[in-house]
Length: 200
Image (cartoon, rainbow, N blue to C red; front, side, top):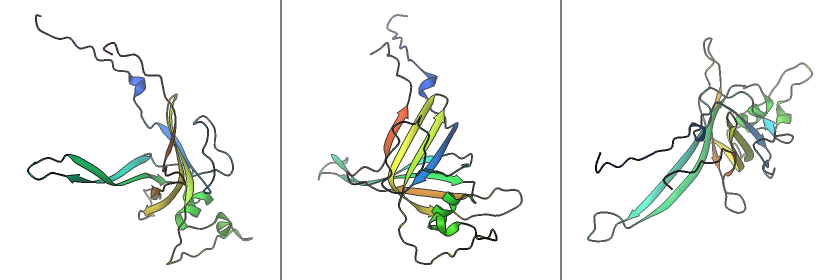
């Protein structure tokens, strides 16, 4: 038809990401990042086990200040005043030592069972900072997204429910902190090559 513009839009399903699987690991601060999402974490990385089917949430908490000149109704500059990256997930293996260590801010050695198979510990009313390194992996077939957090800490814990028809879990929000060069999260992904766009 005369005057009609035909636009060919390329859609590639393999460029989408579904969090079909994944995992989380923790290590002491100073543990270097993995060089590839294909590399399986080994000691000192400790697996955090099964994660609920809500998966992993990568949060962005940002605030900004807008500056509007006298006589105008829209700003001519916006300054970011707060930018925090978080990761949230619910850990289902609540008896795993690495998970308990994080949840209760204790060393794993303090949670080892005694000779009778009993684990005894106390929660303090004055917890100290407990920063650790984290590695999060999201898998969708051959596509993978890896997130290395050089310094992170659990900043929010949800209530824990114990009931017959529900699995108990530790729901956490982990806040990331800048490392010595000012970075909070390092990305290491295995993604497909973007096909050429015929309109480009």
